[in-house]
Length: 214
Image 1 (cartoon, rainbow, N blue to C red):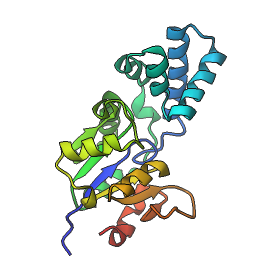
Image 2 (image 1 turned 90 degrees about the horizontal axis):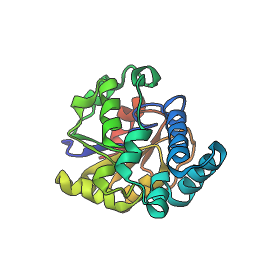
Image 3 (image 1 turned 30 degrees about the vertical axis):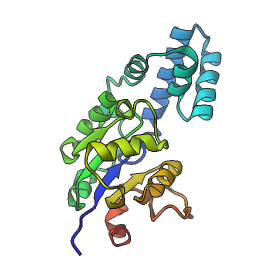
Image 4 (image 1 turned 90 degrees about the vertical axis):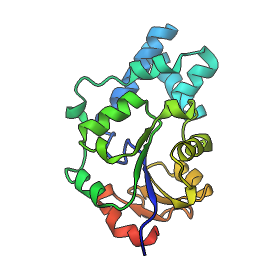
């Protein structure tokens, strides 16, 4: 059977491990942003950041809704990484693994474009992707909102039924499945919900599940 599907990859905790260094840095940067621009102390800023994240799924959405925050200004200032290459944790075989996967590849992240492209360059895989679809291009409606998925597909002339979404957040895969995509969950969980077609510990295991994604 000829392979005719496209891959849509999440970025953080999918193509690299953001938990040790990247996510803590972003959390600190967001807290500092709220301190500076909302006049809060560190404790209040941290509490508000977590509250908006839990209520809206993204701190940015709460800031836009309640404080008229400029999303571009927020994303630029909270995603600065002078030592990015030293903070990334990834599989040294990542490029070889992705290169061997058949089909076009796209990156779809709730992160801003400048950060997403910087990470792909640092991982030496930027040239493997046909498009980098970031939060700006969803009009700041992050996953799991279907709006961004549909905009990605329209922009790249993709049929959801011919796409495979690879992602570490199960709720985002639920949206992908509802649109007709095949789904791969990057997780340590043993059991997967019904909308997940395959679950893997890391990208390195993707070649093992190809037959389940046709």
